[in-house]
Length: 117
Ligand SMILES: [Zn+2]
Image (cartoon, rainbow, N blue to C red; front, side):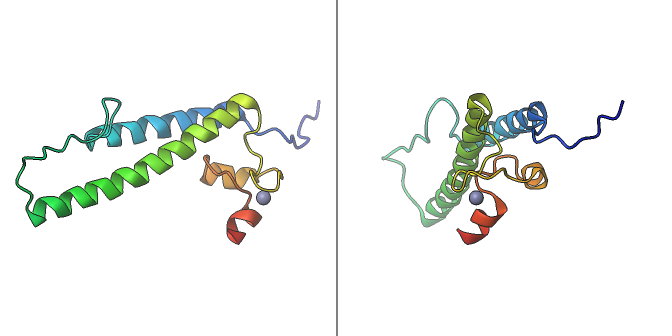
C-alpha cells in the first residue's frame, strides 16, 4: 500500500528529543557559569573589584544572558509542543517549514516573518 502521501504533521517526538537535549545542554552551560538552579552569581560586595575581574564578569554575564535567552526559546518551544501549537508561526499562524524547524527547532516565526523582523 502506498503511504507516501505528504503528511502535514511534523514528527513531533523528534523535535521534543532535540529540544530536550538542547535544554539540558544550555542548563549545563548556565550551571558552569554559576547561573544554575541555585540562583544567580553571588557577588561579594567586599571583593576588591579590579577592571580585569569586571571585564571577566561582563563577558560571563553577556554569555549567560545569551544562554538564558536560548533556553527561554527552547522552553517556549517545548510548551508549544505540549499545547499543540508547535510548528506554527507565532506572528502569522502559518505552518513553519519542516526544513526550518530542523535547522532551528526552537523557531517561533516562519521564514517570511523572521526575515521581516
Ligand atoms: Zn509567519
